[in-house]
Length: 262
Image 1 (cartoon, one colour):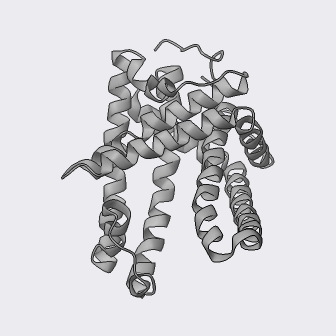
Image 2 (cartoon, one colour; image 1 turned 45 degrees about the horizontal axis):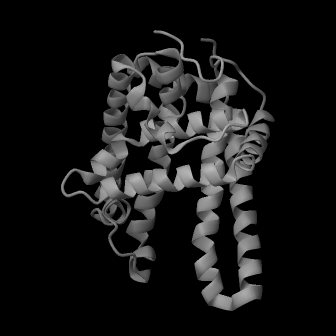
């Protein structure tokens, strides 16, 4: 396993590769992303530990989307079972992925807990418990401050977990080491990841503008409301498709479909 330092321009290439690969298998990748969202939503609705359980499966589910992208890049049609690949990779990798999930859930809940110190838990309840969003709540200065604090605190957490599921699955790296290597990879390639995120922000804003223009011309406010959410989810699916390429360029991955023994 070797860590590569890439140029900032690589961020644009990852975006382009993600979009191109998505459109090679749009039905499969869209279906998998919606299945991914449905799985997380169903788990989050379970009483008491639902939100924590939904967070804990995110690293494994994200790995499933990466493997699906790998297959789509080879012209294959990824099946729904690919989302469960982390649970079929042997006991050692399964244990490691479960540890990653628990650490991620703990880290995310810590971020939400710190944001709750600012607004009394209003933002956390909206994010974790689907509490109703009101205009008064959104306009609250405490709510906005909590949202920005949570966003800033989430950035280092995402750096820790960006590559970690892939390193556990393809290289058999222990969970804590995978978090360290993921952080180092993101830090050393900060320029590329900055360009990557800025490019995706541009894609999202452009996509929303196009959806709004077309839906407004065709059906007014009702069409806008009906089109905006599916359009945003479609772009989110393309974003998740691009994650695989950012990982592949930062680390040597095995031959597609193979796994490196620990």
